[in-house]
Length: 467
Image 1 (cartoon, rainbow, N blue to C red):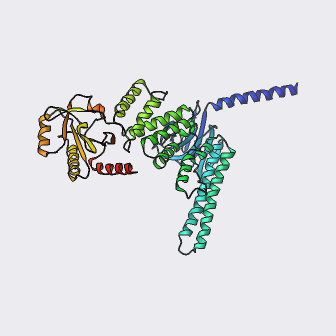
Image 2: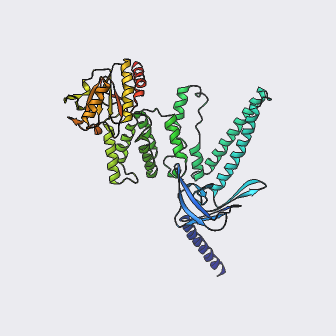
Image 3: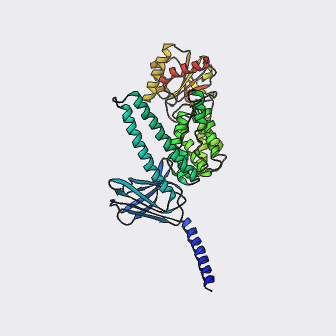
């Protein structure tokens, strides 16, 4: 009877343990003790891209934060903040969500102990290792900069620095290889820098192509846990600022490439699509509004994206429809507008090599400055330049008086009387002044530019034509 009772007791323990383990997996309990801290109110916050959001609040003992909940936290990088929402410490939330972190000092050195979280144990051990390595590198750098050392000695220090850097890479690789799938390994993998092979690093084109091709190798865009870190915005900025040619078709190709790397992960897809919409709706570089139109057409309209209500989708599509008519590289939309004599005129009457479309208002100070700058360029006769000046006000008398006074020798029309569609819609005009530049075929080669940019834009265009 006794052995049978013992067997039953062990089975009960196993099943009970399994029950509590399952329960634990569906909840979180995090205790953080900060020795010497006198706060009683703490916030638990998680990163989401380059922002962070408060997840939980703790009001317990002095210097101790306890966070608990019935639902698991998203895995990623978290931080503990005080009542003033100042960051106190960063840590990880991984698969193990019942753990304790104690931070203090011993013999003047920072000490952190972790109980119940392999991610955080590795995370803080890594910080200690890297800090010690960087301290050694700084020491060696100071010896290299010292005038007292010979070139031979400096060369030895450089070799030692290379060795230390390699030890950091090896240390991280060991963590990644021995702990596949845990959040810290995923983060370290995402942080890895490409190393260009020695045999091609002196060939600029090959090195560039290799670096760009392998830029995302360690960053798993199908793993949405990386959204709960600040890594993705940094990675995106580096990629598009340094490696992607800032021309619409090139950017679109890489946007599609990255969205394809999400492999259907909805959260990652949502984040990237919203990021690209925000980035290219009002782009810093002329012509990249075409990317916004592409993203709306190919992702918002055809795929299910988070936080897109029918009204938001309608507004995005409306915005894209206004932008799509006047993209760089397209033929300029036709306008037949009334001139000062009451006749309807088209800018296609202008036979110059370049045509400037300027939308303006004689009561607008900035418009007047742009008109004057444009006139000064026109007077140089450096380019075979024509101007189609579209006034946006219905004050015909004021308009005529101003252009007669200034004697600008251009084709002047008023946008309030038209035989064609509203110029506001055709050219996405919501304020003035706005300037477009057309080539001799009336193709848009510049949009939303300042009058002072026209000369450089034409010069660049002519250089491209020669090549």
